[in-house]
Amino acid sequence: MDIERAAKIIRKMKGIPGGHGLRFPIRDEHLNVIGYLRGFDAPHLRDDALIETMALAHTHYKELFLTQFDVTPENKRSWLENLVLGGDKKMLFLVETLAGAVVGQDGFTIRDGGMFSLDATIKWARDGCPALFLRSGFERAAICFILLGCVRGESAIFGKNVAAMLNIKRMGFHKTGEYPLTKSSVNERVTYAKANDMSSVNTGEALVEYAIEREEFIANNPNLIANPCWGDFFP
Image (tube, rainbow, N blue to C red; front, side, top):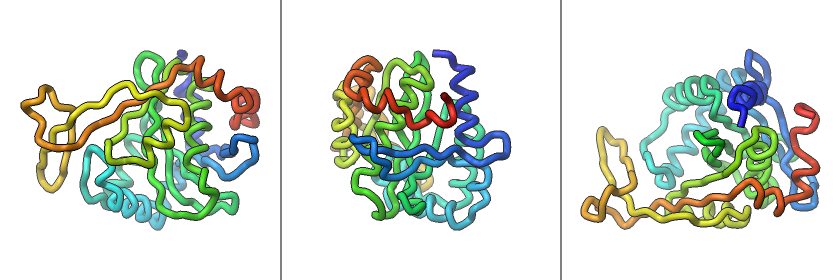
């Protein structure tokens, strides 16, 4: 995997420097367009209503994350500016319906060793095709495997997040491990982490990990690979 090339592509997806993020189609299994992934960009960072919506949605679903706290517009904006727009390994998309309504977010992060993780999924509206977030996962995985050159996809999901686990299994990911969690709390921030040993376990919660190799994803999705969503931007 060429890390420098991948970083340049990710910056272009975000509209860096100073432009608008790229907009990719989300297709169903027959390649009919059912929505869009739009790269989060600098203009979005100045949209107060959007930032507030993102903060409220994260707070509403905080119990599905390993780190749990009430998210304010200020710390949401800081995270977006510093870790999303300021990081070449993290990509965040706004998920749009065919009509252009923003109904949530999705993302991925490039890891060491040519791996990526699908992450940052939050749905805050029910508009659009029911399969929108499932098929978003297929498009993001194809971007990582084919356009960016990753060799393995991974996903770590809080055990209580049943919907996320169903979607990742529908994408062909295989369960690779399940780990008990410890819980700690500091200044109204709750943090769950993998237990070092069973004596430290103080919750009934678990982290479930899934993975898929590049070759298997390509074999399972020939139409998606032959018709990439990024074709108009990265021929």
